[in-house]
Image 1 (cartoon, rainbow, N blue to C red):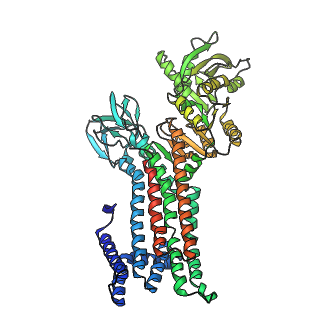
Image 2 (image 1 turned 90 degrees about the vertical axis):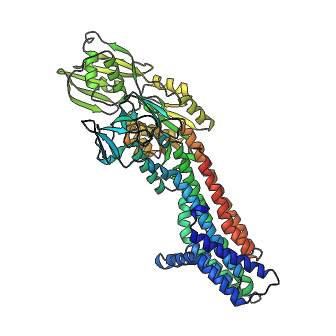
Image 3 (image 1 turned 135 degrees about the horizontal axis):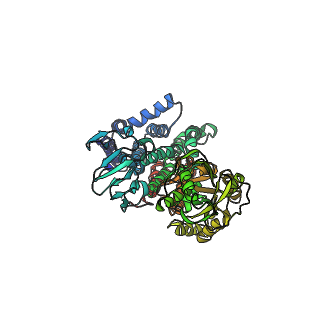
Length: 621
């Protein structure tokens, strides 16, 4: 902390402290010191120590037309000078300045936990030209599809597909994981990570604006705008608090005017005690610092929270609803079986393959990968139309082909089609108005899902599964994960309605998803949790919390960290208010002196700040 204090401040504080101690010794011994000499020494020490504080107090008063905590300290010091209590006058300002330096140090610590991520945003990229040479350019000038080179130890500037066979990447800034992750050829490597292996080459998959590190930094900027209720209340309260305190102290000092038996010499010191102990610094600093430290701790764990208000919501959560595909499951569908009607054996897979290549839906990708593994030739398709969450239709070799959900496909044919209650997800196919069969696909749950839901159960968090899949498939997943509430066969417009029903049962409910169709539900929930690594941009934008590594175990971890952070903030709130209230009462009755008031201000500030800084240790580096 001492390193953060300038030499000028150390000198002025040291001189003022020396004079204060000297005057205290004179005051409490038989040594005689001329009053004017003592006044002059105290005044010069006060000038060096308090000039910036006094100047700031009057600037705020005359320019912003409001009283600040600096104004309270200035009036309290002036009152002590007026009464001839020079050591007390210096003590008020010395310890206030020490409290300020401690405050700046604590704020710097908390801010550095987050702002250090900015260093992981490189200012240049090594673009590989067609002739194999390198060109150093700014990240925003690099186009998608360009090849870039990253040296060992360098931060990756742009997201890209790995062109080398493998690479060891430190992803701690994005995921909170300290162990390097091994990426293989073709995998997408996120920006903001460190290449700890040899020189690697990437094919850029996203532009600078949409890169992982930029999205992360945007989330950090959004976080500062969203205050928690206690924090926002304190910010508003501090504006009106100082004038009220000053008026109350003035009335206390004027008590002898209405009570003739009392003296100003007795009541003015009480008013000064009231001014000093009422300084709101501890309250204004410790609660926001608690939340800010919590945000920093969560960012180290790969959990981005868009503001302290969402920490409060996470701490109060009673229930969470989950999307299935890509959230609870891996989102990588594989074909289990194909049921093909007679007469369509040759056309079925090639026609569906040609249609699905125009979609990026996880089910479509599963069919595409299967068709490629069967060496199916890709046919030309045209007039493609896709309804998100429903299916696709278009023309393949002059044949009209439809593929999608049962509810949509039955409208495309006059034939009676049975809705198969399979254990997976089914894609039904109609060719030229005739039912051609269906493809059954399956999607495994994520490796960490069982552990994550077990932790949520221990936290007494109720869970629900909201999915477009069939009821049997949804219930199989729900049984594996011990999820009590299941909403199956949900069309995109039904998800919000189902979540609203689920939410009514609990005081505070969150929703977790990753797709474009999850964005409305994420926005409507008390707390929207998005999977940030592979989640859509719409879902990340609509959410309040982003899990950077798509690891479900981070959700119970986020809840635990939020509960600890919120509890610590409330501890600080009540500790500061209680101590100050006790000293205020004692001061009003003439029991507390200026030294106890200084403890009630600076001492309480330091103790509450130390307590607030504990949030920085919630997640170890």
